[in-house]
Length: 444
Image (cartoon, rainbow, N blue to C red; front, side, top):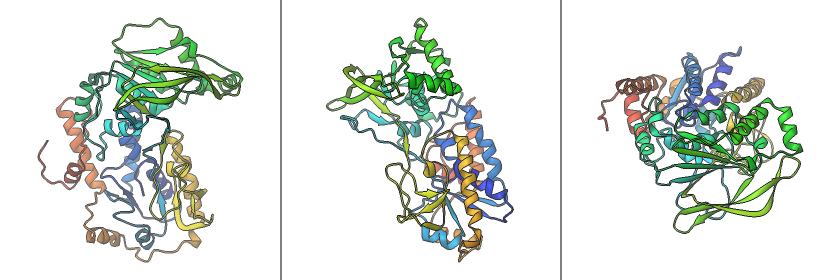
């Protein structure tokens, strides 16, 4: 269940085992690829190239794609256990983790994941996004925070060569943003950026990246991190270099602030500011408050403090971590006993940490557990591959297939070619379904 990288990697590993297998790869959305299609910023074509490897997996004869099928609504765990010997859940994590500070729910305060879904053309989000703020705060110091900040700061024309949807281009072109402030409560050595993602901020000829010398602090814990990790060392070196250079004159500015803990979003009917507390390092890489506060003049706040998985019907769930309890990928019930034939992989298994490639290790462990359990798995009561299709059709579920996805893929590439762009993404679920079924539709 889930046709993002985690599910596709699991299917690939399973087909390479010595066990004869047929796999149905279900996806809630009409199109596959999950995080690659709807979670990677459009100006990251290098990461989106992973799609080519995933596409080769989907072309394997043992694998069948069934999109636009919503687990828990269109199909249940009881249905799956009747038609399959085993079920692997790879549904990822798409919700924003909460940040419980006063004012966080004011109009003008947004979740970073929601904004990512908007600029990536997710069919479940509105087509418009309010971009009237001149000064914006982004809370968090991970790669998602950098993506959100970079897309907010860049002029829309710099994104025209990407697969950015037309409605997103129009929204960003009308944006009034001039300053984007990114806040982290600890020091530069504790930032979770990857070096490549951080350096990419400085590539725009229209965006000045500013780092403040007073924020560049290190304690013993910071020095340990720097000496033990080449990635941390590169991040710190880049931030130090930016902190000592003379400010330029690019028309937009992206400010990176460290040792500032957000404590309150200010405003009454909407966001008018952000209050932070100045922090100091505690010697172990942590931070403690100093009791000194600063109010920032911002008109919008985006929290990018992590993703959270969603509860899956009929499965146990840990609401604090947003994951399904498991032992080496085997789903465990409330009593800690294995739920026969049920497995997890990817972010719904380990939480939203690490890069896309790390899901391969998850999948390898989970498939190892499944293969070890083969002698004890209950055989499906209805193993005929056509039985599940009959069920979906009886329920009037308009599912998509790999062939349908290929038609949508060709259509999006042609739209891009016609306008001198890489691809123009179709963002309406109805249009996606119509194109995948090769029906005649009217362009909006």
